[in-house]
Image 1 (tube, rainbow, N blue to C red):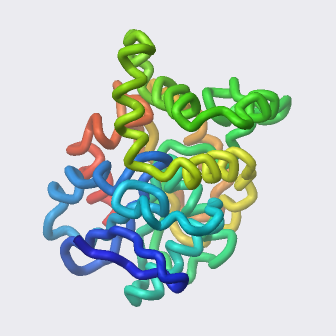
Image 2 (image 1 turned 180 degrees about the vertical axis):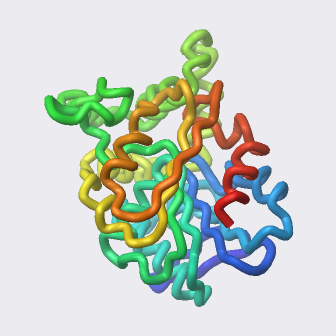
Image 3 (image 1 turned 60 degrees about the vertical axis):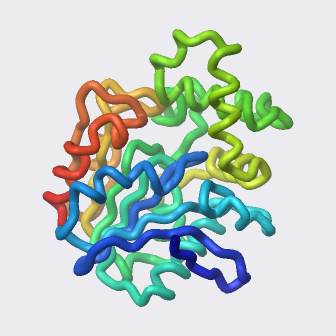
Length: 270
């Protein structure tokens, strides 16, 4: 086990595999570094892969002594890049990890980066009359966010998981909830609640135009949480070389569903 000590004294769990070109891979909300374990194993000898747990998640669950927002996670990422003395970083984020990448660009720019890979994430989760590429394929609005205020984390988590993995809708709630409760116990509820609010409150659409390194978007088809049409939106807004890769027969969990394809597509970019 490795720990990265932040300036505030809190510690983040991280793993550092291989050597050469650095690749930082960031997980999503309520997930962990383990989402990348299989692809990293497949990519042995292809670079240096750094995977870590965000505050309040899994191995970093105890890093929960401060109010945590998306900007906080971007600051943590910056400390890791500077602390490990990294440059020409391939920065990859899946789901919330993509949001962290966009916040990092907004605050710190792209000088330490070689390229950015965003995986199945919208720059704006709240849908409105003019924006239909947000959460739940255009069906999540500000009213929904207000309705969630004060809800228990388990209820929010169940809604998210069923949205991310549609086949779980077939499982009765009384059977699903105990399993989800066990998974959720790996996270600090205060941190994930704060991050859910922060993430859903953001509008990072302008950040795409601030990216000054090559940009790639990985997305599942038919998808689940977000519309595949986001790939065309990113392409239309990027001011840098842009690529995309679709993962067929996939949900939001496409990295876990197709680790071999994910590793292959990532290797093409390294």
